[in-house]
Image (cartoon, rainbow, N blue to C red; front, side):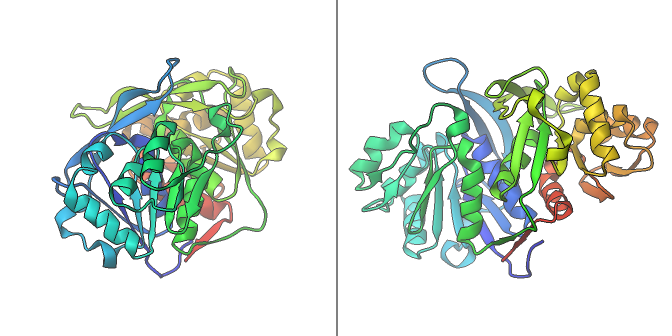
Length: 395
């Protein structure tokens, strides 16, 4: 899956960084053996940063909602950035307004840029490039409000043409060692560029096709992270909901540890389906992916969904399920005799369905079944799933 050449990435973090823009690179890079350090000035390893959900909820401007509590795993003051990292990733979000006035951080970004190594920015974090004087003569894109800032900093504004909906946002821009994007909807391309920038080579026998089935209150990370990661690897990824048409949204749910006996729930991003349920055929896909959350409680009552799962199993295609997604597998009768990774919430359901819970945390592949206990296991899950699909990423 990954070579013995260890690559490393630094994600510069801060309170109210955009949720997807930190978590997608965090999990995907780890899936392929990249060491990912996450640090924030003024915080220590083990401290947490608040993340922010940025999405359109029917108003003229995007809405910001509270996201996850993201734990840091490195101390900012211990970083040796020029020597220790192959790439610097700066998520979008309001934290960059604070860090862009922090002379030490701005100098660090400048010094990293001067090494010629890649810096990745998204949405509003191009502000850090402007503050560090790294935009002079560079083409750059960002959230549209950043256009005058980029131009004042000596950059040339670029904007993806013909964007009419979130489904059209697919491009990011690389000019020399500067990568920029409008935001998280372009993560499929962003992640591919990130991997290529640190020397990744991709290999597969043919383009793989993956079907993702979701419903309202699907788990936020469990839907989006695999969706974007598989896109980055060149897969055709179709997301469908039985009750929604292409271009319509499912609301997602954030589940996170807030100190209670079980995790708390908040509203997450909108997850836009990009295909119609009526158009799908099992024969057109190599894999079925079932994210968790509370959406599976709706899907398990839909006979067409349960029949679809049975057909994937009967044709020995790969089936992947995260968290509560295994609920649908239980209803379809495909867990009998299978080993699963499952947290406490699904242990009883897996057992009564004839499955065997092997890991309470983590991920597991058994024959054509790939499972994960929940979103904290997404790095391992992505590694297992890409291996099952015959996809290879080496450095």
